[in-house]
Length: 607
Ligand code: M6R
Image (cartoon, rainbow, N blue to C red; front, side, top):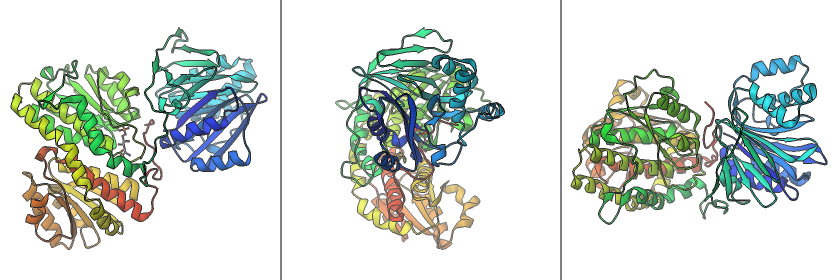
């Protein structure tokens, strides 16, 4: 996804726009740019690479102008080079865009046939070219030309535009990607999220799907998809204006791993009453009693959290769970249960595939629950019930604290399901809640292995391929471990169900392939350890993650990481820590860009 910001200011806006872009850089970081209106003309600075490259350009050639827009890009169409960086511009208009224009090829051909000269390989540039055609050929005013453009483009987008000759106007539109308008004193702002606007204002209005808006310093007007003027509620955003910092850590990822005892505790506090280890009242509309089947869907790490929760719902609530990754689920012809329930898990709440899967389930009459971190996100806004985690801003691209907070939330939901369906007695409920209340302490204990894990990771980082295996709830942990490692260290890694190893992947084992064995002392322990011995017998190098008892019973292994004893079904909440630290230190040993790994963005708002 990309980050968008626009300012109608009292003085020059390029530097405030740059500062806001810094807060949005986590959304995309392969190129960036700013355009302002200076003496009626559009002027721009753009640069490939991280924001500091743009900073250098602005230092060498500052931009004047009281109106402007800026953008951090995550490339979809066209390489991450300066020509493809936003803002795109013609003599009349400059635009920034987040999302994808699906029909850009046909529009580009049509516009090229009219003699329009394209400067970039992006889909986004058709937005600027279309507006220009309507202005030049039909003499349309900016708002008319903008609306006509909206009538021609298909796809998902958030757009902001400024116009030559007018430094008191920003036009903005939202369809599929969020956009917020901020009201200041004699100044106005537009941005991808309230976090970007926090240093300027906390008075924020979110555009609804299909809305567009005309913004001047005096105020703004919002129009819905039919063009009718509509009122959208202004909210007081709680996003902090303090720039999120690394708090003494080398990377946001390290900071976020270390925050887990605290934020997991905060998340738990939303759902449980610690005084008597009971569940608080939540999700009043999500009546598990009435459900025959539950669908869970998400992407990436959030999907693995859902996969772990499947074991919980089935065990504690005897509720069959249909789970799939969102990009598949949305295109399957699922025979949804009548009055079924569906839970969508997303840190950002903006992941395009998860949002589309949610809409599909909703269209089939499912009751929708959303486990999200960002309360104002699209997924939260379209859900019937929001189960908000309390992880705080997660900046590192690799999801860590959001994962454990998602897990603790899903565990509370599964216990509630068991209670609603009359399958968990009061004692069983409080036993599970009490076990959950231990988790922050156990995570803190797991963090104490950091130095040992750093040492092992230095060895691990020399490998070209690494396998992760586990059974039961440790199987999704193996998948998550492999994802974490590959996305930040670029080491090829695969997660497998331990029992599946002998059905093919064991052919990969030799002395060069370390295998991370996730095996707490639970009912699967012995079987997983047998699989580990099959690996040893073939010259493989197992790295065992288990508790003291498990490590002692396992015999000789290449390396071991000790984790605290946990409730057997809740072990992923604790084992997440060594798995995250392994990936983190393997990446730092290799010297990769841990927080902003190549080719990735924090959340993926395109299909
Ligand atoms: O914002 P979401 O939770 O919907 O994002 C889903 C995935 O894109 C995300 O978890 C991704 O897999 C992370 N980079 C994993 O660390």
